[in-house]
Amino acid sequence: MIVETEADALPSDKGPKDRSGSSRTCIVTRESGSPDELIRFVAGPDGRIVPDLKRQLPGRGCWVKAERGLVEKAVAKKLFARALRADVNADAALADEVERLLVEQLAGMMNMARKAGQFVSGAMKTEQAVRGLAALAVFHAIDAAADGVRKIDQARKAMSFVSEDEKEIPAFRPFTAAEMDGLLGSNAFIHAAALAGQAGEGVVKRAIMLEKYRGSVPVRAVGGAGKPQQ
Image 1 (tube, rainbow, N blue to C red):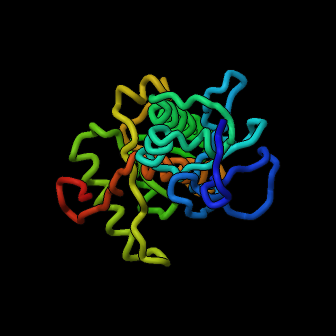
Image 2: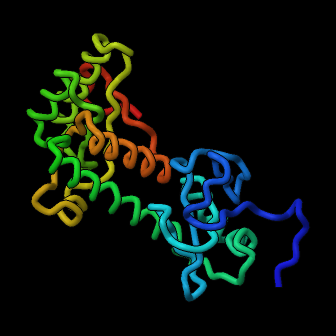
């Protein structure tokens, strides 16, 4: 039996259609944030804690800021049971499961954006998208050759001086080439760009969440340098 005072109680929602308040509160930090910045968790029929990335699973849910360390802390301190006021089981590998789902979600969005004509791959097409100010973000395989990355970095740096906001197009390196073969099959890439449009924006949004979850440092272009700066 869980006994707690009102001050000890952790926030939760009443279900996926609960729209009370425009923000959610992390059960670890107790900080409020947009639902896009947090991950919803629910208890499955067997009492096991399940990540609900699409925020559609039925039942009471609770939220954790999208950071691996916070998910691990919620498991270690048994915060899911306190938030859901139930005898639930959070597996020790829950943080790994969340990352796997975030990876699959990003890969799925890349495929969707490609079908919509909002995701192109190949070094030449990626550089052209950057220099034409059509790219929202670029993507490289983690093990991409330095020369190919450098050329696209130079384009990113150059176009930051002529863009309206003078900001650098973001770059992400979420997967190795081998991981992409498994995730994307024939759509695997070494260099790619997300283009303007709802699907392209969805790719960037999911890449940012995965990067934040992993605690990655954004890759910044260095004009003429051979390596990306972090």
